[in-house]
Image (cartoon, rainbow, N blue to C red; front, side, top):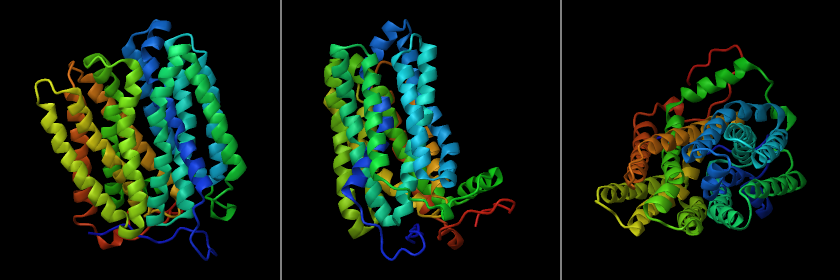
Length: 429
């Protein structure tokens, strides 16, 4: 098997690896948490939004897919811009757009206005989200990157753990519009701590000129690098299973099993706590065993979880605890798979981290939007679409890893590649 390289990506002249400051970890985790907050905090208020805006529930649920779709596509543009203008500029732009969209959502008087505001909000969220992995790649090499991103995801995971419960509490005592007001406060806090504590990590001499041909050439390099794509698709498929759960779980828990809306948050949060636990375990074990071995372990256990999902799916009427256990087994392993798969992909592209991060984010959330939408269309009043959708994503993740990362990898694709200057032929190395 040809693993991804571990060449450091520090700026020239650095004598030692960057030391991880706990404050940096918390700040990057908070920035990364904005999109999970934007998606998960208003899930309990979907029925109230539908009633207040005189809209079908299905159309309100579509706002989740709209956010994910725009979020995925916007990263393809915003990621390369962070290689041009620096990380802080793109984070600042994203936070400003996100704040304006928060206000638009809170004041929306119809579903078209709400959907438009959510699309704009996704652009702001994409600018922030795509910059965080690139910023970390500026500072850390592969195994350290996997450890740091695992810890960032651990902090970020607090958002989907807390968000549904916070949203549920808000709508118990106030209008759903206050959910977006709370999101505005969180955004302001994230922006304040970022700009007061985190310096620019991409100096001017390492930035790229803004040339469309260069950007397109870099994306062509990404598309032509089979083992890198293997890591990317492995993470995207595994993440797709999580999105299937996020999109369909409220319907399964609340409508099918009559779980009170106030209890949905804690039940949802159990799965996130499992992923957080294994993210923490992964961060502790990566320095000893390496990102590659931890990725293989996570995929192996996730494959076993797929068998559990398939078994439960074909029971006539599985108990709620059995559905929750099967889904939880899968989501727990995402805490190991996602960070290490991303590290494997990013390690190939040390000189164009922003572009690579954009491509990875677009693939991950684009696939998540597609799988979540597809499973929603298969709604049949049972838990089977949720369980089979997650199982299919897990099988795809294993298939992509073994086929593209482990079998038949050419030796000339085992090393990191640099961006190709504009005007040259952007062919795979």
